[in-house]
Image (tube, rainbow, N blue to C red; front, side):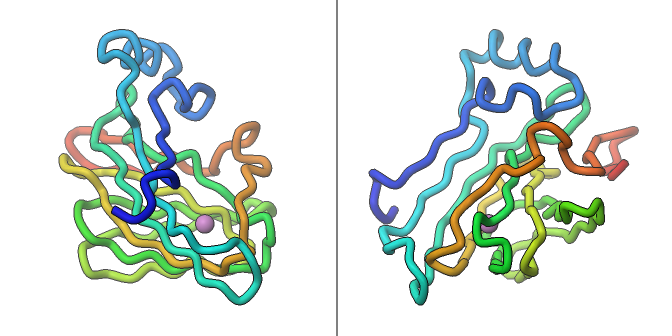
Length: 168
Ligand code: NI
């Protein structure tokens, strides 16, 4: 799948500080030998203005406590750049937030496009029981920035409660 050198792998241990239940994350790391949480296959396209970067990401299913597996999420380093996602497989939510505290979300579904406008940080959440696989396209010079995500998180988290997907 594309250039294997551009594969980015995030393991459960890379997600310390992101989930509400830190103990549950440590149990997951220990009990399952620090499993791969998600992986991204980036296009070998130059990161420069005018280029279109694309990637395929695979976010595995599961929960940390009762919180669904998610990506770290990011802003773009060039904040005035947007992104388009196409769901390929699986079910989930795209959580989006601004630095000013706005928060919105949209459902992933195979064949469905999700648009992330400029300035919005974005995080994928797998609410299903199979890998959530998506294609993303974004400007070549967009870059990635974690900004306030490690310290502030997102205003909402996605849990399974009584068998239901709950954004709270
Ligand atoms: Ni992005």
